[in-house]
Image (cartoon, rainbow, N blue to C red):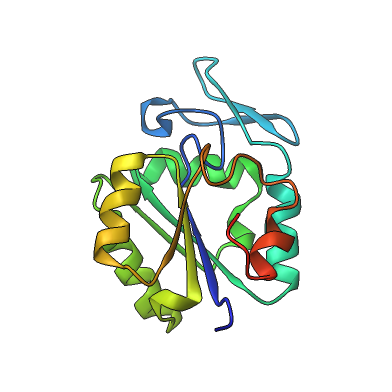
Length: 161
């Protein structure tokens, strides 16, 4: 089965901050991997995230966000990093039910669960999504995968992170 979409969490997955909803936009870009909010809180992209997103897009695989956050700060952070252009679908909602977010993404992108990969750092969310979508390739960040460096190639070859 061809990989059609990669769905990513934000907090502690795409970047190091644990709760972007607690930040105070506007954000200011410090460097390619770092932004700070109006109160000086720093958010740093994990290493190789930008390269990962570029490579996935280059290979024709859709990218989506499923994030348990307030949409305002999360979208503002994505904008400050210049990452919005990489994503085909962004679902940011203030609840932990990622299976609902994934359902929206799959429907909008006309993809089946077996054509998707979901990456999140929260073990409880990962387990619930696995129960809801047993055919979805679900990876726990920091366990199944701990870096975006080289991840695009591994996922596109059909391996699990």
